[in-house]
Amino acid sequence: MAVDFARTLYEEIVTGGEETLTRLLRAPIDEFDHLDFKEIGSTPSELARRMLGPDDRDNLAIAIGGFHNGQGGVLVWGIRCSDRDSPEARATRTCVPGIADHVGLAGAMARLVGAATVPPVGGVEFHKVPLGNGKFALAMYVPPRGLGVFRSEAKLHRYYFRAGDRFAVVPHDLLMSMLGQSPPPDVVVRDSIRAEPGQQLPRADGRVVARTLVNLENHGCGMAFHAFLTTEMTLPGPLCTVEGPNGAQGFAYGEPLPGVRTAVADTTTKVPPRGMVTVGVLVVTLAEPINQRLRFDLLPGAEHTVGHKTTWEASVEHVSEVMTLARSHRLRPSEVWARLFPR
Image (cartoon, rainbow, N blue to C red; front, side, top):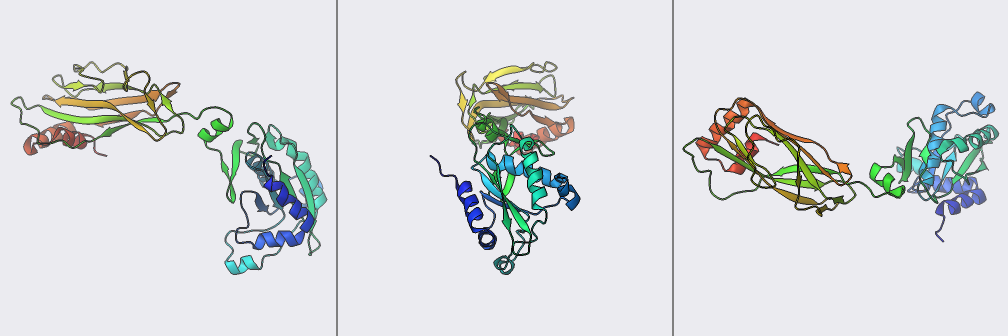
């Protein structure tokens, strides 16, 4: 059976009272995965009616959901604990300001616990801690998560978890994993310039060749199965040609590639998280006249998911300028590509 550190901490506070709270406040690490301190912002009239102000309601919901989605925790209400305190100030901390109406606070929180998260968290406990100034602190114990994941009904209705000394929103990939689903991949397309030997040979017809590698990268946390690339392109002139990443394919001017699905290698291709696979070489041959922009719209994806659309675009003026530069300096095809689509 796993150790419930939050329960152990809560029982220490119940037994040791203000002395334990003072020791925790003065510790080098005061707030951590299982412990948090919060001042009360609700007014005396709100507490007298067993109600909480909006900030306290949000803090209650975030704390219950955030602690419960992790390994549980204890939130001590009514105690000031600032991370801006100097080491000298930290060493002399006391349990202030405290709560005058602990009965109203405990009643308000007990009434709101069931509505703080979806679904409700069971097993939340409260214990009043008498303080030397005649006031009280209220310790709230939140048990660790069993099954499922719990959404905090704060103003943004998000899923939280405890990360060090604060509550953070659960990232989408982690949330899916907590819900028992495989996290999705995040497939993006990248061009990759590869150095080539020699220079671009001058051509009698004045044509210029641009070349790049096309890669698919998985920036997600899940495996990308059956990765693919869909490409639509517009060539800048009637004599320009292109060889697509899946082999030699010529496309005439005015006939943009109508969403051709291009397999990376075969239908069993897998791209692991943070991995990359090369689709192939994309070669564009530019020839006069140039009378419209050069554009590639690339949409990568994988099984059950579509990645982020990427657009590579060069204006008529820029294409003509690069062609002139390539002829005069005999640029390599990869260098031509880099000048067409600078990063």
